[in-house]
Length: 325
Image (cartoon, rainbow, N blue to C red; front, side):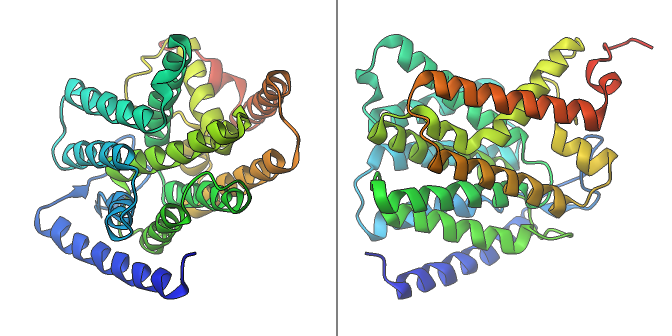
């Protein structure tokens, strides 16, 4: 049972750590400079999302929790992501650390006991999700707000299903609240950085995989459904247009809303939060307990989202081939 004073102490501690990090980042020039694909126009501190992994690591040490492989994987993937925020690294180094971290995550979850094809599927899903969440971190409030919805939903589910300790979930929620205080605003004090978006994805994926293993129900993947829809449809549209999907871009739906439609960042972030919260309620309430129902639910979501993008963005923008005049 988590006591109220523990929550307050952790909140104060993480708030102080974040402020200390700002001073360090300013001194060592760990900043984000706007470029042609940015959705912001001012120089801002990068890496404020380091607080997510710090919260989990502190909680593991203070409460002597036993998920050593998960915590080690989180530390490694956060470390390499933070280094990449400070000084860009080669893709090979980042991929190596990501694979090691994912392997540690799978070992923690005993996934290596599964058939090879399921291990491969889980590996592709986790790596793809890590990158998708990272790509979706492009406007103020979206990473913190979206992560908060996912974590609060998982905390709610944990009250009944008990798939993990409440200490981890509450630590992650408190860390996100601290980050949102500085980021969920018109003029952000900091951005999450790769360290924030990737560690957030790693943490949420761990809990989602835990609840899937506990319940034997794959429907909980949908707790990241809105991000998945935006990322997946964007890749498909870019492939159709003949674009290099590994090249930086501003083709996500949220980027279109913020950049072309000039909708305030916070409003776009709230839109994504509200839609994901609605989907989470559906996931909790509806009995999606077999593969056919799951596939039908995914299909309905895809059709609705693609129709929305066609309506809002227009066919010409989404389907115009690269180089075609």
